[in-house]
Amino acid sequence: MKIQIDTLAYTNRLRWLPPEQKLLFATALLIVTAFAHPSVQILIALWMSVWTVIYAGIPGKIYLKLIYVATFFWLTSLPALAINGIDVAHIDLIQHDAIAGLNISGYYLYISHNGLGLGLTILTRALASLCCLYFVMLTIPFTELLQTLRRLGCPVLLTELLLLMYRFIFVLLNTASELWTAQQARGGYRTFATSMKSLALLIGQLLKRSLENYRQVVLSLESRGFNGELRVWHPHRYHQSKRYTIEAIFGFALLIALEWGQNAGMVTHI
Image (cartoon, rainbow, N blue to C red; front, top):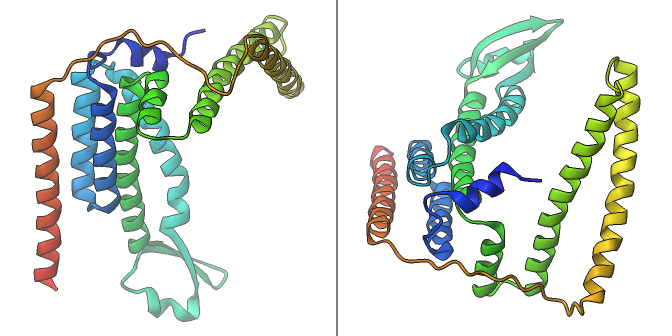
């Protein structure tokens, strides 16, 4: 079974760049994102999108779909941030914060200006962070990422666990797809009641088959003399790119300068 994200990681245009270079680039921008202002975070998101879609050749439709999923989760949390409530007797305390409101049985529900600002800040930070993460996911194959982490000193036990978890994601999705197709062919989702029953059966069978597959993996590893380390062969050769290196350094320095300028402006204003 093919996972589209994994396929793109092996076939993108930046495949020949060293994974260390791409990982260092994304990590540096992720650190800047954690402390930057929203305007700089938006620039980081746009710049990483250019690297992912234009330089790496990732289809824009797939990339926007990934961004949409993250934005949907932000939208679900926005009401909790933007909508506040207060007793009508203390309504004078939120005169400058309330944009619009509604009086319900002596309780005033209102849209908070500060809440919307906080929601916007969370959105820009989340988008910038996700763009850095998607760049790593879509341009570096997972096995090469683990090898890079191992060379950087990451414990072998942790990388092996990540590799096994990554494999079981494929197994889980493949098993779920086969079970769902079999149920769909037998009309298992015609009505709501039938759908709930079929879904319960699917979850039960999925757990059972996952445990069986896990036991098979354990036996196969023991029969092959597994000693606590999985070795993966990487015949692919990489080469550096002066153009991408210069662009990354120049862009990173420009973002730092913009962030420093904003901080200096705020201090002067105060």
